[in-house]
Length: 406
Ligand SMILES: [Zn+2]
Image (tube, rainbow, N blue to C red; front, side):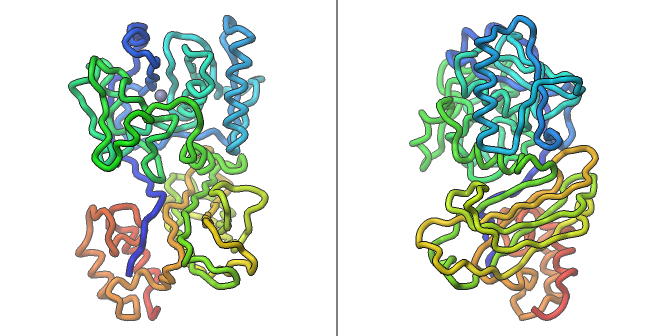
């Protein structure tokens, strides 16, 4: 059997770094005024940043921010609202809010911290630098901090200003999807450089060397990530799309969709709905076709659910590039963080019985033993049924839940 992991593995790792300290000197060393993030001192846990409940982000400005600059920030907010379920609202009396000003440099906290959180802009005339800082506040780290970045770039530590090396540490990141050199959250090769490039694209990816750090547009990956984090303004929702190959989808025919849903948080997600869509553009929209919906009374903290279903591709679906997406939303999450995720989607392989690792037609003790024998990190292996890169108790639970003939 093959369980192809094409998108969406969520990983949290432990990392730490010095707390942010404002340093105006970086503005001279860095022509693009590279952004830095605030890392709380002592932040050593596996932290998935808090998202904003309902996608609602209250904001206010420091009194000395000009009307021109306020309008520029509002324009960047509009750009983000146009592609996701986020809504920025002027603060009335909300406790958690952004306080936007020119505090020296471009920087932000990652995610909602609760209470007032300052967000600093230096390059007021760059709409995408402003978007970059707002996206930090929405909960994203830098792209080059991803756990898989060493497969794509080489970090040239000797060229990085010592005081800013922590911006290149691998983060507690919840990034997903293919590594995105184009992301507006990626540094350029000159960020915090003392001379030579701070990052070199590995062989096969050289074409991205001068693209890294672009601040001209939101990449497809940026938009997909925002949609994943803030779907339709619904807290505790996520959406994940994978591209189907042409032979996987045929108009009028059935195809198999397998999705792994997981509640990563410490709160139960109630009334969770998983909706499978067919989309032409990998973003949720009114022209997407709902293929199937499954409802769950609740997803317990840590619970993993396995949605495996045949869906019918509507007759008349044109040939071309199509994406299959699974949107998961739930309610009842009191802390407002996005806890319920779609972690994996597999299309078409008609993998009715992925827990049948031995391939003998039934899920039995052989499969339990196979999982136990493979315990630990495995990259991509058939024993890693939930596709999180590690064979563990979750995979064992899937086998046990599927016990019996396929
Ligand atoms: Zn940044």
